[in-house]
Length: 285
Image (cartoon, rainbow, N blue to C red; front, side, top):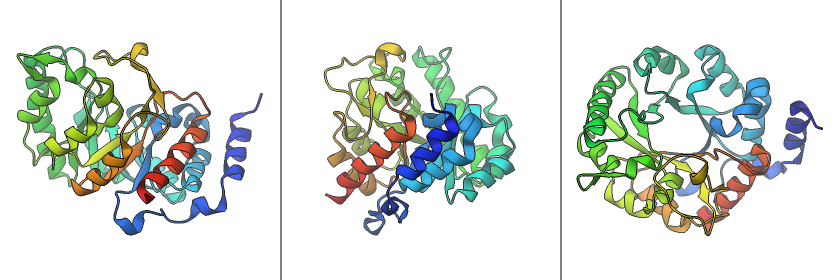
């Protein structure tokens, strides 16, 4: 059995030299391409520097941090990221205790402070989503005062309907566009039976960051997040319409894109390399 260190060494050695050059699509003004570090959460626990180096060598230029990662100081985490020649424009934070992380996010150098999900206690009724929207407005105001932007991330459960409106609609209709942005997860939109392309068009200006992961063919849609909804695959290996998503994302003002694959059938860094290579083809077509 290979150790994590051996795996990282092999992953770095196996990447082509061309992968370290600047993003091929930079000239087209496409949003920078990054990685949500939740994808490599197990390896990063013990080999953070090596994981970050491997991510950069693939060709990604940014990373997005996640809530369980903040056991080390913001200064040390930022140093590790910068030392790998990466940028960290965005980070995820849990709903509970969100306001206690303002200073951490600021020290980490984030542009976007993202709430990872609505808690189950609120995400089961229209009133609950309205209460979450009120909280998002309050956080958005405070985050803006600190020079950052607040956003919230979706799963599929936000597309349950209450009184003819989905949870997403309740959140977006009851939040101030200047204070609250939506980080759209393309996979979870599709898993809920909706079209990411239609969402990008409908909510032009509200979606400034994207999560990218693909969905296997021949699987059923669902509104409950859990094992029955986890049909993940590498970007470009599934059924989402990336040929439309990518140009529309640029047109509608998306500023950052992060590949996130919650569960991988291959080693996570291998999956990230496949997604990166596939994305290059889509953006170069």
